[in-house]
Image (cartoon, rainbow, N blue to C red):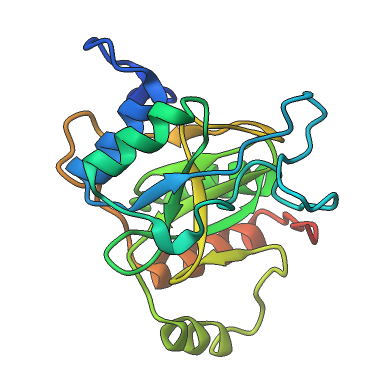
Length: 221
């Protein structure tokens, strides 16, 4: 039976205990699912779509750590309450790898078509995080050696695929970043102790096959 049916886009924001949705979601990730998180730098407060960090050419505006740095990611409830108590609108950044999920991401349009193709084959997917420009499929943690062997064995891998592994990061719902809202395209089931995620090999194989079979050419961005 499929764990995730349909689209439940705002699962973690539907809270009834009075907790603001960002800190509530951060606490769910960290304390229930044991995913280390930290606050992101946030988008430009002037609403330009840029980033509040010092880099004028930031490629992931608002969707990355800055102060504190990525190594500060934690599952400690007191630290999370302090961070979001001081920065209640800060995006939630997942430190991928280790005991937390990793991710495979690709541009939004090819991702949507690939997921439709995978649904038709009965491929079981876990949670999928969506921004206006890219979607990320969460997968089990993997090593760089494992990823290297996987990619080396393939004849073709779209250059627009990105891999968020150990030492990487990913913005999680319901964050707002420079490019817009981060949401669940495929949400974890309510009450999940820790969401199930597939192996990276299964996802890469299935996504590459789906893109090839549907004739989708994923652009290089």
